Amino acid sequence: MSSLKSSTMLLIAFFLSGLMERSHGEKTTMASSRLIDGKAIDQGIAYFLMLVALVVTFLVH
Image 1 (tube, helix red, strand yellow):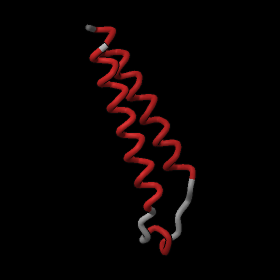
Image 2 (cartoon, rainbow, N blue to C red):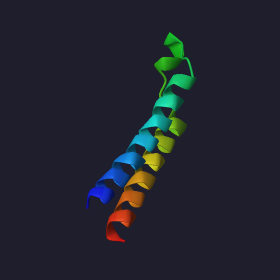
Image 3 (cartoon, rainbow, N blue to C red):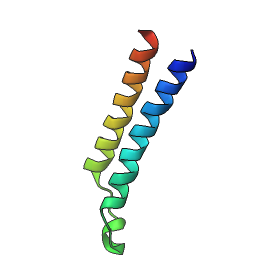
Image 4 (cartoon, helix red, strand yellow):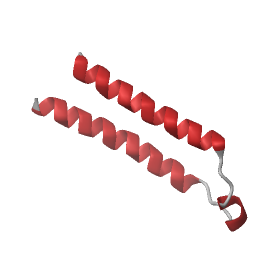
């Protein structure tokens, strides 16, 4: 069970590090920060759902 927790934590850390890198990669101005980017929201939801599916698959297997 310990290896399962460590693998899950490693996967989550890898996923979050990718999100942090992505968020620091683009500088926004004050005018553009007020606009909601639908594509970025959709992509964030897709990443989250893929992570959930991967964790569930790993736990069931």
